[in-house]
Length: 104
Image (tube, rainbow, N blue to C red):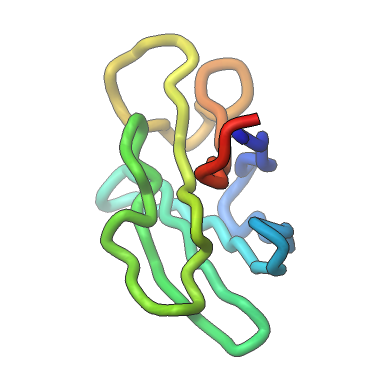
């Protein structure tokens, strides 16, 4: 199933979320130099990965280890811009979601 997750409204947004039954911390940061959003993923044991918020790709594809969520995170380009989200693009134009790998 696909679950909608909160998207960032500003640099430094942070929240906890349950993904496939385990709790994670998601911290968003905007990198002005690269013009890109970055996601820091952590759990109760600490930091897991820092990944770019790339639209249309499996964000956690390169993340390995047993603490990684079993599904994947996605940035969805709702407006079909064909690019990654800018600083103020989340909301109407881009969404953030988790796919748990199960149909339902």
